[in-house]
Length: 142
Image 1 (tube, rainbow, N blue to C red):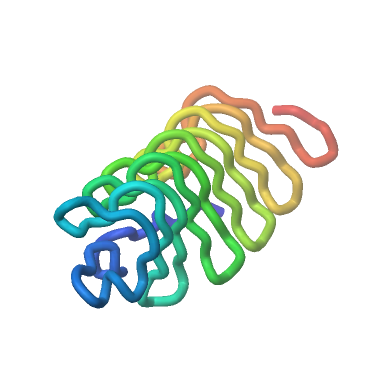
Image 2 (cartoon, rainbow, N blue to C red):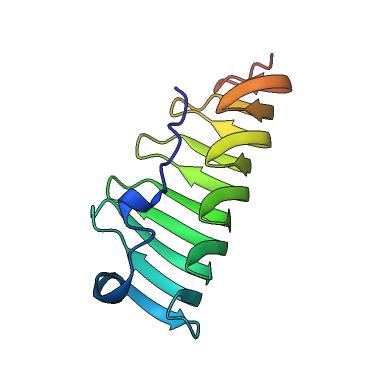
């Protein structure tokens, strides 16, 4: 089952300003009043909660994005996007640790399915692509 790309755009509240921002954000700000440094942000849709680094109002650096369904992502953010190295877990038991590009599993990583099957190798656009090894939960490798 592929991972859905996480939409982290302004319509989910990442670009709120003024009193709306103040009500949902706790942490450091810069001289312009933008989120800057360590902080936490509760999204208006109540599904997402972010704790981590901000630069000039955007998630940037290391952080953890928690979801109301029990899923989460922890790792690198760049310019408000999940990009870099991190880990993602889904409430059904799937787990991925590796490279992300704009919210998608892309690069090298380890993807473990809910049934215990494990894929170690290249990913692109949330799909297995290139070289990799699939190991079934029972230990058989492919």
